[in-house]
Amino acid sequence: MVVAIDGPAGVGKSTIAKMIAAKCGFYYLNSGSFYRAYTYNQQRLGKDVFDFPDLLRNAKEHKISIEEGNICLDGVNVEDKLHTSQVDAVVAQVSAYAPLREYVNGQLQRIAKGMDVIAEGRDITSVVFPEAEVKCYFDATPEIRAKRRYAQQKDSETYEEVLEAIKKRDEIDKKKAVGALKRVSDALYVDTSYLTIEDVCERVVSAIFRVKNDVK
Picture 1 (cartoon, helix red, strand yellow):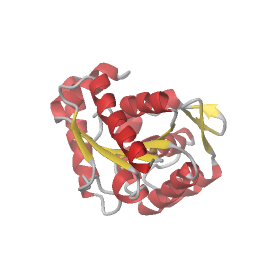
Picture 2: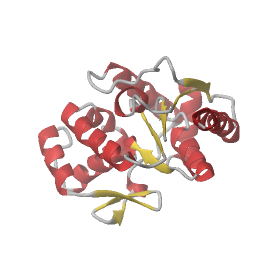
Picture 3: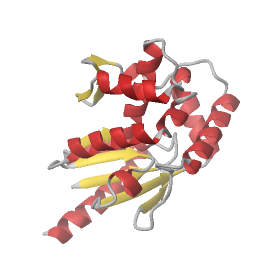
């Protein structure tokens, strides 16, 4: 079974998806982490992140794996390198590069074959797993999302800077020529603005069990 979750940045997708995966015994996939890891890799190599063909070549030369829920690059855990302001500032543009999206989507689909997975990102329900048994779209106001990101950040950005970055990211994500953020018609819509993580988790888990019971 595939559970696919889409939604804008800072809406709580990762936290909730991880919780659902733990509750249901599913394998957790975060498409955004792949783009962040490839962005970080290009920066680590001292290369131009906007030289997209070069970035894609380097992505294919350096292996990404998921170990104990963490993204590893060439076997090294880089999870704590993926959410810096340096990566945040450019990852939306990187992830808009169509050949890289095709490469990442292929990896996600390969990993998911024959497994119970919960996958989250921007175009998981519309492009990567359009046949997913359960589809969800999480949402929240930009201000709420900025407060969450501001509380989690390790950099010295102000709340206003975080909010501006969130709004800019939304604009880029919705206007991508390939893999644009969109809410598909058959997705469960959940506004997480004033819900607890547990509340959202319960709604999705209930949807999963409804589908499993229907299959039986």
